[in-house]
Length: 335
Picture: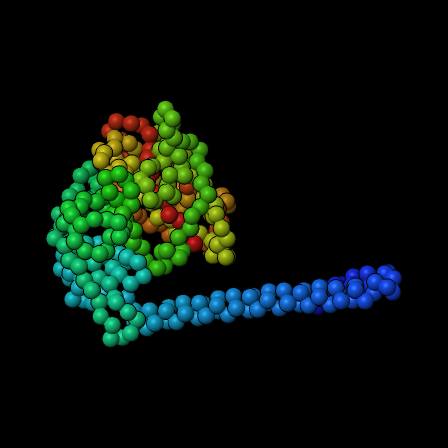
């Protein structure tokens, strides 16, 4: 409305400042300009209305999908899950599927729709699990659909990183991630932080940067310049945590490499850490197992909603067989 009044005032000033002989022409031109202006404003308002309605419909559609997902659930049927097995990995894949890995089988399960009478599909593979220098590999003949679309059928071998119920990452011989599965809660609550470290190892032109810890699509570790004891990592969120603060951290330990599994034992691994968040009286000490598989550490604090900064100090390490440098593979903080 204010824009319209201002525009009229300008037109009136122009009109009364001109001679009577030109008044008629100016009036006609003013009417044309005004009509064009009104038409443009009307079109702009209509476009905004359509965009707003489109956005509202999309949000309503997404809410309905979530409601149906909660109603139907993505609970894997009992007949799909092996009940008696000494080793089992189970993790969500996408919004509607799960992968279950046992010593001898890999099973992929996915629901086909949201209705209560919707069915599901399963793919089952005979596999060989191999453990080499603390690394876990899976071998099988792939002829299904659960991997990325550009993955051809044939014999496959992947390096496996997992946290039962939450994470399942499969890496190929180029240390590239082929399949990433994580629970919906994990996906929503995981945070990509800004990282700094008190040291980073340089070898020629290669730096084993602390930023490698969050590049989960490619395996390359953070490595300390010295033994690692006393070195620190700081984490600050790259976006607002909306008042939740950091609640936990998930760590994959050591030097993890598909083709050079021996590097895990060659380098030091983290054994004990102290996690603090600004207040010297607020910290927790955690013990890490000597494994590259994911480990989660929960930050119990009455000030948890205010934790927007973490400092991780290495207190002890598992000594490497060849190098006195400490390596860490991945770190994933939760909000």
